[in-house]
Length: 440
Ligand code: HEM
Image 1 (tube, rainbow, N blue to C red):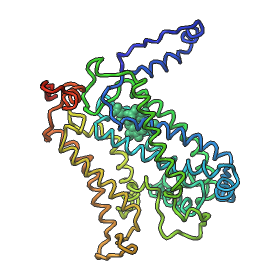
Image 2: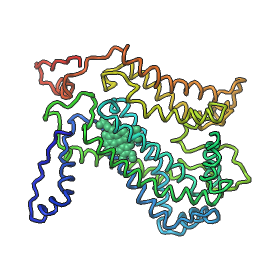
Image 3: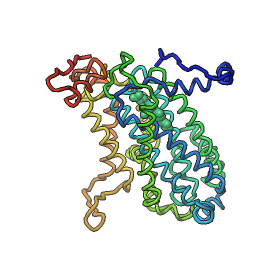
Image 4: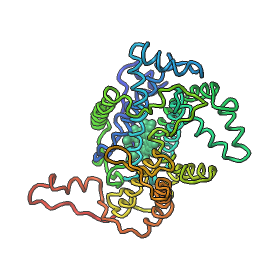
């Protein structure tokens, strides 16, 4: 919080000397003392979980890079033979890194959903939100380029499909695509460029995370009520209260992570990617990783390539604009039942888009007893389902969200963040009256 003043007192002569030159100990002590709302729930532990994921990806990525060969001729074997078979524990480092990407996205989607539900993007946290959106885009770029590196069939064809999208832009599209490819097709120079950028971007993400946390420390955390912190008694020091809670959440997350690493290492892997890239053989079904599927479905829902790319960009751009689109004075959707319901349908639309993105473009495929049952309704079910879900995706952003702020009926907002806790039956002694709630 901005009014927070440092209480750090250097103890030794050395600490005083250092503090006058580089107050790094004061800085860390201030972070630990940071006044944090006392009512944060477990959804607020995902920031720490994400920081953990980023560190894991960087450490395992640096180790993998020691044994990786970023050339068209050697990449596939360096992964499948050297790393997976020859290097001591190479299989483990790769499994952590590959599954870590999915865990990172799982955590980021929960973190974003938390921010949307509790209105953490609203003033005065707009810059914090924008920096989060930048991180998300950088994460997608990093993950996409990382997926190309094993140089399997899906790596190659995924790279071809996605980079070719840039060609849809008139005039600049073609030269940009060739610059990215390093030639006239996806080939060894493309792989080299992607490796270089894939190594660089996580460090840029780390720098933007630094800004993200700085932007968090100016207004301080939001909280489940969305009500501003009003007094010192509304907060507790970050350490030990939230360091311990975050550590516990990270430990539980590590157990789930470990289940994938050791028991389901290929759960997110496409089998085609264990076959070396072959520019002459197109796989029957090119699908990106699960975390990109909703956007892939939006892209495919529109027949015109350029319009599809623009819709994809608009889908991401809408996320950036959210703080200004939402006109409601109430932050938390706890007190906005209508907004909550429309938002839950939006989450459903994103899931439907994700499912559509994983299906054959003209698929009429529904799961049946003994295997997929093909139901031909005479219409392209997957494409139409994607279109309906994509329309709702945009209508929620650009019509429902701005209008609700004017027309919805909100529930009474507590006057302090402590009120809902103190008025809870479990905390009120028998016979005592519950604290009154006033509309804010
Ligand atoms: C590497 C990725 C990220 C890391 C390491 C990270 C880290 C953090 C941390 C440590 C916090 C404070 C603890 C918490 O509220 O959970 C936080 C808060 C926040 N983050 Fe992120 N974040 C990341 C990505 C994102 C993204 C993609 C968005 C949104 C698009 C976002 C939006 C927010 C918001 C709005 C808050 C404030 C929450 C509140 O106080 O209510 N973050 N982040």
